[in-house]
Length: 286
Image 1 (tube, rainbow, N blue to C red):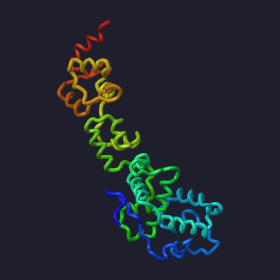
Image 2 (tube, rainbow, N blue to C red):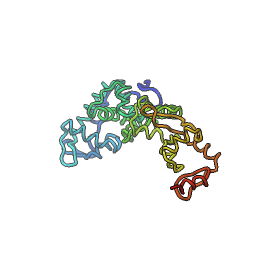
Image 3 (cartoon, rainbow, N blue to C red):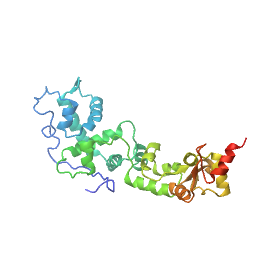
Image 4 (tube, helix red, strand yellow):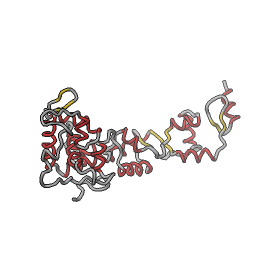
């Protein structure tokens, strides 16, 4: 069956056997328990249904919502088995949009991007609930599934705890960053929030601001602007912010300029200067 979400993160709808798949004998209640008196824990249910421990919170929430009786940390086995049979039956009606939504979350897309690109209404716990239904469909076919495939990862590892940055989005961020686009423009075009954007920029060359240059050479902001006006410091590589007030330089630009000049550290202040004597005379002026 073709994937419903293209690329490397596709999830194809799991196909269950046409008969006997929803019988109680194929959806175990609890190993070794007698009918009517088994009280498995959440962990035991996950083991029986071949789901990762990462699904514990979502499973407990769904069982409580469905009204499955519970005694302390143990669930009523018959009611839990009924719930999983009903969930598997309902999973027959999952749409291509549902699978795409789960696949995008597995790939690290944030909810805002999933909502926009998959045209999904992510209200409440819809995403984890849908993902659990998909995982239950795949859980009976874990053995023949190829490792690293989306369905395999969903069953054995659950949804990622943190929102990552998909490879395609990371490449777009890299291209835009190296092209000098402002951060707010990159965030708007990729749909990434501040945390995700910062993660996507990891490993890329930083942009040195006026403050960074000031810290590096011990110059005041006024002194930097003076040097820019005189042409004794390289013109900024870009600007952003309100009316382009924030200047920035690539590290290579500053390093190339610095390597061509024998700057000397002033013994009386943090400044690095080209002409130490004249700089010291300025210190001695009343």
